[in-house]
Image (cartoon, rainbow, N blue to C red):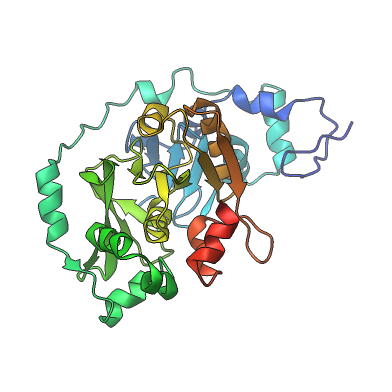
Amino acid sequence: MILVDTRGVSLNKPLHVNIKDLKSKFDILEVAQKYCELKRVSNNDFTAVINPLRDEKTSSLHFYIDTQKFYDYGSSEGGDVFDFIAKVENISLSDVIQKFSDNSFTPTVKPIRDNLQPVPVIEISKEQLQKEFNSFESIDINNSKHKEELLNVIPYWLYETANKEDLELFTALTRYDSKNNTLVTQWCKNRVLDFEIVTYKRRRLNGGKWINRKGTHPNQTSFSRIYSEAKPIYIIEGMRDALTAVLLGLNFIAIPTTSFKNFEDINSVINKDDEVILLCEDIQGYKAMKLIEPHINTKNVRLICLTSSKDTKIDLSDFVMQNKSIKEVLNVIK
């Protein structure tokens, strides 16, 4: 029997091994500890003190407990425990599997997470966050710098045609940071329109990423806007989709990451008779939504995968970018 990896890679040796079961026997932190010293960033995130994959002044190699994945932000490379071994030892995937299957790879006895002291949580008051957020510039569509950043998030037609109340909410959530030339957005937790600030995220210029404000921890907090019982509730992912959903006039719950498991937070704003639609943006997003689906406090749940003109899965924001009106978007996602 020729073994084929889940990514479709044919392996050279006829090993009678279940790759998924083999991977599950190893903790990525235990494996990483054989090659580098690790430093705790959070309870889920560990970084290499010195990157064993390449030379760099400050290591950007991270390991994540919840997904059992690594990611090198400097080279934009990542993967699971097998991919890391192949990369660090410069060997093929089949050789990695052979190394695991014949027990020639011996992990550390004690996981590194037990050896490290947790990073103290920095408490930031709601008032402090609000004051800091208010110090940024209000969005001015006539300001060329503001407009340039804004159009990286939503199309101009959506900004122009959004309902007045939706536009007012959008501008209340969004500011412009002139020091870093980027948008800053509140990450809020709310019931109806009574917003409580938890944190905000800042959009990086390189790659359009949204990052947390230092010292805040929003990864288990959902941001919701429920204002009409007659409309379905959409579960979406990320701040960019949340801002898009505001301008579309949607009821929505935005989850911050694909590893989100705070189902009580979701159910706190859902009634048993509500219609809930899960919007998936990619394979990881699909898996996350399928994980969430059975925990939602209603039987009226549907899952929709949005696709681009090239038939690839995309998020709500990119889907809106390729349309020309709110009506066109709603015809697809209803």
